[in-house]
Length: 409
View 1 (cartoon, rainbow, N blue to C red):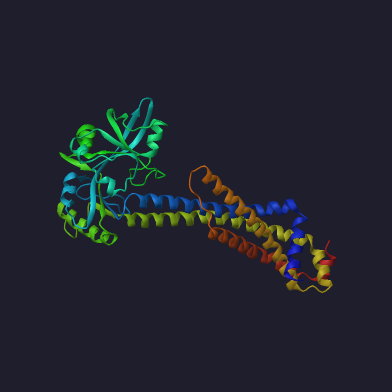
View 2: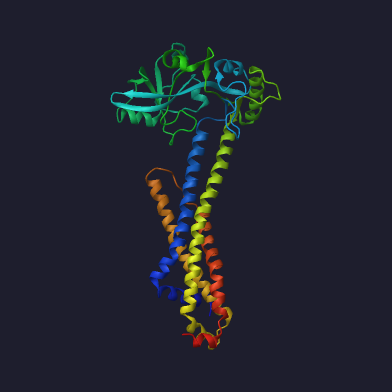
């Protein structure tokens, strides 16, 4: 009996017990669908967040207060950055543009609409450093900052949330009760806008924030506070040397020796991407393990059903052996039945997983992408499960004595 004949016999055996076959395949279907859907969702989330990180600026380097070690922020001398720190590093070489940034959660009001907004205050150079592309209007300039103008540039989603279909340009809104004029709307980035200045964020001039909005909230120890200082390195090759120069200047600014633990952190855009890649890889492995458990359970169910099938078809096996069928032929037949059961379940599971990914994409939650690699992985795993859990029932069938099998009641 050749492979094609074995497959046909396997399909007829499975078709003879349609409901039992369908229930047996359920574990494989769920497991394969989970693998395909989870990998698709993971790929989509990774691509979206990576695009956001890359979209916040070219060759970005940022100085944050405190330490971002495994044990959490551990500032030794201070856990804040001051505007004086920005002035100390403002003349560092290898920089195309830079800006200090002060962040605070604020309330935006326009008529009856209210939104909680992560507001950023920065210098006009923010537009270059953070690659802030405008959908309409303009970004604030040096005159706006020096004149402490109450002007604001808002994110695309925030514009829709507050103004709906109304053009927000030139309209006034309240930020924590203070009136501001909208002069620009940022282009749609998607997501929350990693690193600030995103679709649901807003930016105002730094001097305006210090003098007209935040007041004492932006002052510590009698000195103006900044949340971070961002730099756009002149070239990609300048990123690492710039980090070294910034750490050296900041150590001197904070009175730290070379052996003292830094009370600040200098992060590059690549460091964010590397850290994010590690996190997503770990999460994907964890989710994959959960999906693997479903396949394992499905495999045990298949082995159980195949053992029942061997018992039910004992006389058939004895008859085939009596007319000359070899043990190897019986072994291959039952193995093929198991693999066909798993592959059919795998095919249905891939379709189900693809459907879940398409549904998530249609809802615009995550741009889930089903890749050929994930489909191949799911099918390979399903085939492996079929072989692994089919060996024992198949070998048991192959070892049956023809005489004992024919006498079986």
